[in-house]
Image (cartoon, rainbow, N blue to C red; front, side, top):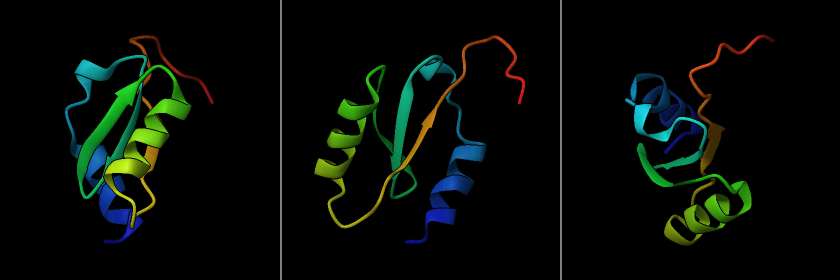
Length: 66
């Protein structure tokens, strides 16, 4: 599975339950979430040892300015 597949899943996913948290996406599904990115990454790697999970932080309801 390509990393782009996980990113495309993320763009379409309803992540409203994860506001302010880190999520890990592997195999086009959210496999781990939480506020500690190291724990989320470790849980995702344990669940998907043959893939590199996509990690992203879901912003709070506040606007993000880049």
